[in-house]
Length: 128
Image (cartoon, rainbow, N blue to C red; front, side, top):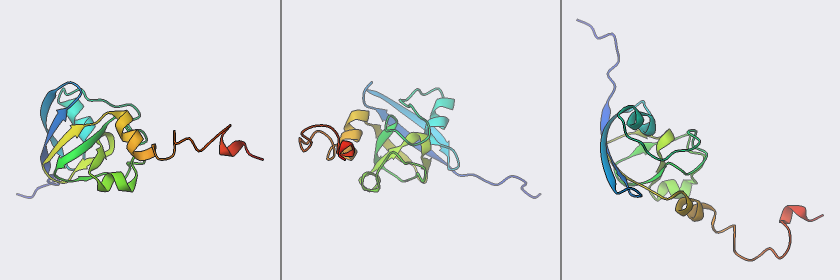
C-alpha cells in the first residue's frame, strides 16, 4: 500500500500565558502557525495583526526552535535573543514559550530611538 498524503511532523508546544498565569499544551504541525493551531484547540492567546507586523503575540522561547520568516515586527537581534511571534511561527521542535507584554518587546526593539531627549522641537522629518 502506497501513502498518498505526505507525513507532516507535529510538535508539542507548551505555552505559559504569563499575564494570566495560565499554562497550555498544544500539538502543532510543522506546516501550521502556532497561534492558529492553539486557537483551533480552544486556547485564547493575545494577538492583533495576525501577519507578523506587531508584537502583541510575542513570546520568549524558553526551549526549542521556530521558523518565522514572516516576522517583520521583530528585529533580527530580538529573534537571536529568543523572541518569536506566534502568529507567523512554525514549530521546528517541541517548544516551551512564555508570552511577553507588547510594550516590553516594543521598548526592547524601538526604545533606543524614542524618548531619549534628543529632539528639542518637532520631528527630524519636519526640518527643511
